[in-house]
Length: 101
Image 1 (cartoon, rainbow, N blue to C red):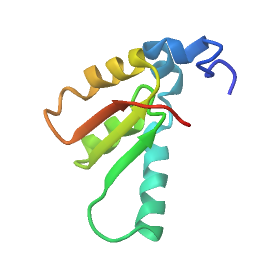
Image 2 (image 1 turned 45 degrees about the vertical axis):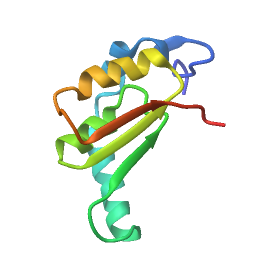
Image 3 (image 1 turned 135 degrees about the horizontal axis):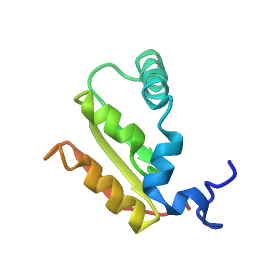
């Protein structure tokens, strides 16, 4: 998507703006992912992993629903933003800096 490539800058380098632009529909997207997991995944509670978690939009929704979550991203600023947003839950989440390769 234009403006979201971290190599070229754009929205991906501005976490707060990225969240505002991409906020609409986040809960519905997570609903769809949970339906897929229920239908195709193993039974029971799951720990969700979000590669390229960025601002943690999905992680926050899933954690708010009581699920354990983990995410990684290559950009320290994105991880710091996500950590601040997940801090309302003292446990049940993990973040790490990681590459996609």
